[in-house]
Length: 251
Ligand code: PAF
Image (tube, rainbow, N blue to C red; front, side, top):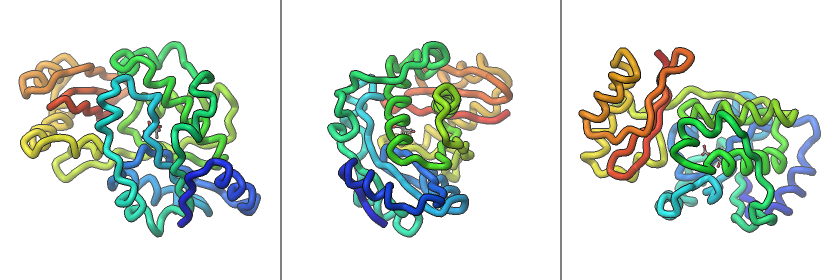
C-alpha cells in the first residue's frame, strides 16, 4: 500500500499504472469505520486497483467549529485499510486548492434543499472536491454510501452533467448492532448520547409518516433539522449533544 501526500507524485504514479487496469475509488474524510471498509471491499471485488483518499475537506464545512472538531486519525485509518487499498491519497488543502477555491461546482436546485438548506455552501464544497479527486484518480468506478443520500444523488447529477467517465456505485448503509448508521461523528457522542442515538433510526423506521417521526424524535430529545419521505425512503437530520446525525431509511 502506497501513501501519497503530493498531488504531483500521485499523478506520476497514476500515469505509470497499466492502461487497462480498472480503478475503484473510495473518497473519504478519514476517521474510518467499518462502513468505509465495506466500500473498499466492494471496490476490491470489482476492480484491479483500489484507491482511497483521506482528506478533511474544509470547503464543505459551513461551521468552523465542526471542521475543527472533525476527528483526524491517520495512523488508525491506514491500519484499517492495509491489505484492501493499494494507494492512499492524503493531500493537504494547499495541494488540492491551488486556486484557493476561486473555481467551484455549484448545483442550483436540489443542493439548496434538506442538507443544503441547513448547511449553506456544503454541496458546493462536496461537488468541487469530488470533481478534483475524480480528475486526479480517473477511476472506472467510485463508491459512495447511501446514508449520505442527497450527496449521492448530487454526485450522480454532476457526473451526468459534465459527462464524467466514471460509474458511481451506491453502497448500502452499514449499521451498528443497535441500528445506528455508522458515522465518524458517532464517536463525538457521550456514552449516554450514544445509547440515545439508537432511537433515531428506530423512530424513522417505525413511525407512519414524516410528521409523526418529527414529533417522536423531538419527544425523544433530538433537535430535528428535517424529516422527509421521498421515493419509498425517509431522510432525516437531527442534532444530539451538538452532534449532527443524518440517516436514510428504506420504507
Ligand atoms: O462523504 C464524505 O466523506 C465526503 O463528503 C466526501 C465525499 C469524501 C467529500 O469530501
